[in-house]
Image (tube, rainbow, N blue to C red; front, side, top):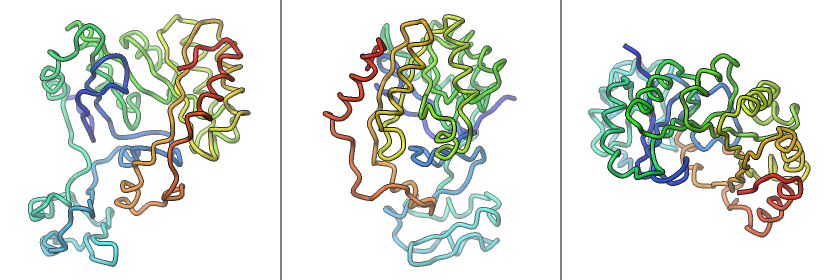
Length: 298
């Protein structure tokens, strides 16, 4: 049976493609962007998750753990993931849900059942979007969902880094109604420092899809100090303009709402706690750079 680890299903989404959509978030990503909005989705395996904001410090979870994987310190419950056997006793013992698993293993049939619940709301524009993590990191599951949606007449799109083998990208291009792909940084060295991988494969895949005529949307996350400089946007504009097709580029403003996730994971958050979205005037100026190169700026 084909399954994937799903860490979230967002219903009535209006930011992950056209219309009202159901977005399914799959665990596992080959990139490690320093600004990742879903750091719980980077690791493919299911792990324990601790939400300090709803913890009542009863320590029932610690008392229930037979392997010593849970400890208490000044920041609440500390999880030793190497010692955790995922037995689930702590999840059952916690009265508030502060301790839970960060995902669930889902079959294709279970995912399609969740999609069916929302079909009446899709209308003519909405549908399903596979995201992550990285949707291409679970190809058998993702491709099966896309094919099933096509058979049922449901629009299905994917959000992806396009850091995948060309044959995998081709398979997705055959069954996805649109591919929403990121270009985070145009300079390969800067891209490697910020994400852990070179962008050569990503740009090559985008050019290949453009030549195939695949319906594409390019997104650029505007991350203060990483991607939001004019040099980067100008380089992306030149690249997209060179593709010879009208491919829109959407600038996504910085989202500061994920800081608590990093606290829960006890990982470093790269940004000042007071960092806010980039001012709209600045975003508009970056859009004008795209437009100056003849690129459709969203």
